[in-house]
Image (cartoon, rainbow, N blue to C red; front, side, top):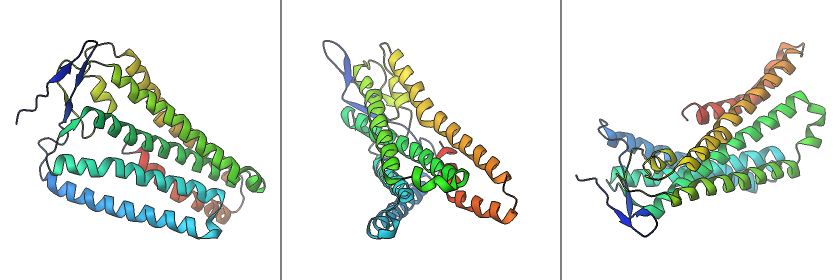
Length: 261
C-alpha cells in the first residue's frame, strides 16, 4: 500500500490533510492482541463506571479519600476511551489515515488524561503520607476542600500545559513524509517530522516529561521514604503491617501506571 500523504501548501506554512499511523507494523498475530485489548477496554470501562456509580450513590463514601479515587477512576475511564477505541478502529480495521485536526485532538485527550492520572496518584500518595505520618491531624489536613483544591489545580494546570503543547504543533510546517511511527498521534514522532524550527516543541516535550512523569515519581518516592521512616518508629510489627496494607492498593496502581510508561 502506498502510505505517502501529500501535504497541502499555503502562503505561510505547509499543513497536511492527513497523517498515516504506522504503529504495530509486521507484528505477528496482531489481531489476537487487539481482541485482548478490546476485552481489556470493556473490563476497564465497566469496572470504572461501577466504581464511579458506587462512590456517587453510597453516601458514606463521600469523603476526601474517595474524591481522589473517584477522580482516578474518571480519568482512567476517559483516558482509555480516548485511546483504545480509536486504536482498534485504526489497526483492526486498517483505517490508518487520520485527519490533521482529529490527530491533534487525539493527541491532546490521550496526553491530558494520562497526565491527570499521574498527578492523581501523587494526591493519593499525599493522602497516605498524612494518614500514616500525621494520623491525629489527618481529618484536619485532608479535607474535601483541600482535596478538591489539589484536584482542580492539577486539572487546570495540566489543561493549560497540554493545550499549549498541542497548540504549538499547529505552527509547524510538514513538507516531508507524514508517516507517524507510533500507534497513535504521539507528540514526539509528529513534531520531529516538521521542516521548520521545532525548538519550542522540544522545550515543551521535556517540560511535559519532567512535569508528568519525573516529578510525580520523585514525589511519590519521597512520600514512601517518609512513610517507611514513620513505620520504622512503630514498635509493634503488627501495627507496621496494618499501616503498610493501607498503601498496597496505591503501590499497585503506581506500578501499573508508571512502569509500562
